[in-house]
View 1 (spheres, rainbow over the protein chains, first blue to last red):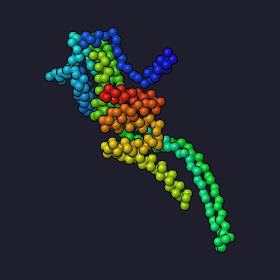
View 2: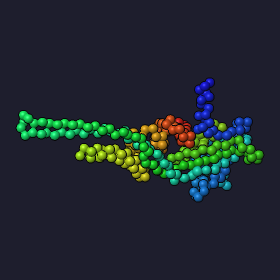
View 3: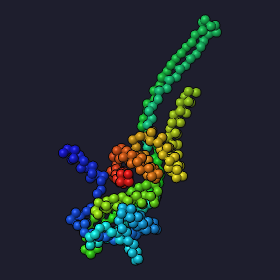
View 4: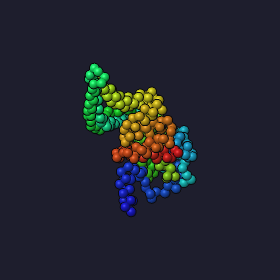
Length: 201
Length: 101
């Protein structure tokens, strides 16, 4: 029981589960209508990229995807008669996120030993050698080194499923994904979205 | 003369660290992620408890589609971090990489 209590703050702190209306009968849903996805701020074409990535991922998961003549997209998820609308808002779409890595340089210190040697005397028998040794210890310390900066991509999505007529929200999820390449990050982000989606249907 | 050697030796240690970092980013800029990983390994050996370095390692492996090593790097990043945002990010990556396995 103690272990269970210790785990609760961990899950609250770092795991963001989707919001779900558990009373909604997801088994009665036959299809989902993907609403148009708008571009992120000034990133022209980002909406289309995410939409295509989504339909591609849906297909890879085995769902039938129908693209209507009027540009609408329908995803067949079951045999039910109900329909849900799927809205996706791009909350983040950038390949210019500056990342800073603080790194620490550990100076472990060092010991410096100086050996001085001098030989005095001309004759071999009476030659005298003086050796003196001095040792100095330099303490070390841990100091903050440089700040490293690099640029990476970040894609964030806000997803919602709602009933078209009542407007009732039945499922909602928000998350983001990071990577070094924007196209790959966008693709991974949509895959992660559908990973949660799959639990419903 | 000995002091001179000592200074040179210590300086070389510090510069090897910063040059490894420089080379990591140079390789990333050139799109050579494999090379970047080999330089990053030197940086990590000098700072092995820095979660942000494992975060970068995870992303580099993901760019190379090496899901197994990416997963290990993100798990290490999560283990070392006490930053909730970074842990959440690591969890997202771990969740997806496990799914891809």
